[in-house]
Length: 519
Image (cartoon, rainbow, N blue to C red):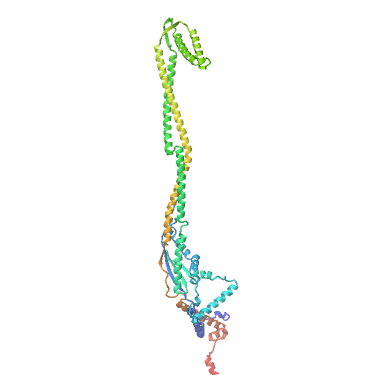
């Protein structure tokens, strides 16, 4: 232990000895520190905190729908915590302070706090403080350790530092605090900031486009819809389409019916054809007539008829010869016809032998049956051909409609798309007008729960806290100084120190008073 460092060679008795030995110094240091803290507390510029509260409730800003969104939309509730944090970010946005600076000047953000006192000790101290701070900043600027800001920029930075926004636990309420050198200034500045914040909130959540844009776009879409409908109607008229699917179904039903009828008619035709072949075969084997008598007549009816015709032609020749010359072509043709007829008469016999025969009744019956069956066969064949033509026409019409289906679907789709877009934009016009009216009246989902307060007492400095901390820091500094002085003192002041240092027991001890008395 004798060789142990002096710093750790202490007992509780030694500690108490040091405290009582340097109690005057400890008390002096404590008083000095306390005096300095107290002077600082009473001389430093006082900051006043104005406080306001904002309630962020559910509103149109909380819904994920904007009029600029086209097509089907679903109102989606945003995350409440994220929404509240967004409002905090808007409140702390630099643009608010820039607007406040532009409207009210830098004195609204950074007043001359060092000259706020009207003379006296406070005024002198603050002037000294201002000078010292200026000198320190000058050195920092010269060493490029700090950037020199313009007055406006410095005012904005200071104001942003003086603003504090907190979210109350488990609520949607924002507590906004602003510090300034003066109660009235703190209240006025926070009031102005809140007004700018409410306006900024509306601007941030405002629609990206106004009602005029949506009305113009809706008119354009209405024209596009009318054009698409006109094109569709023209296509339907040109291609005789009323309802494509119904027409196709009707054609399919008709085709199926014609096919069934064709099969039935074909079967009947084939049956009629077989019967006709059988009857014709039987008719070919049957003689048409059988001779009953042979008669010779002196009169040839053909010759007599031809003479009658010649007589009539000669009358016509006489009439035309009286009117036209012999070179007239119709007259020459008439004379040639008379000559040919006379030649025919000369060729005919003057008497005629006639064989009289009777018709075979069986042949006659078969002929009638063949004629009737042939008529039925031809009717069935005509019906079959007609059904074939009908089937071909129906199939061709069905193919035509199938070929038009793609184009018709495209035109109908264009109409549906144009109609949907038009309806969406008409709805957006209404929503946009409502939003514009609400924005014009400054209606939002924010409610001022508490208007900016006028502080009664300064929030800084906290005099009671500063004095308490001054006492503690002073006592600690005094104790630290006492132990430092004792550590630096090499003299032996107690019997224990002498025994530990010298390693021999102490036989007797004299106080300084006894020593002085002996000498």
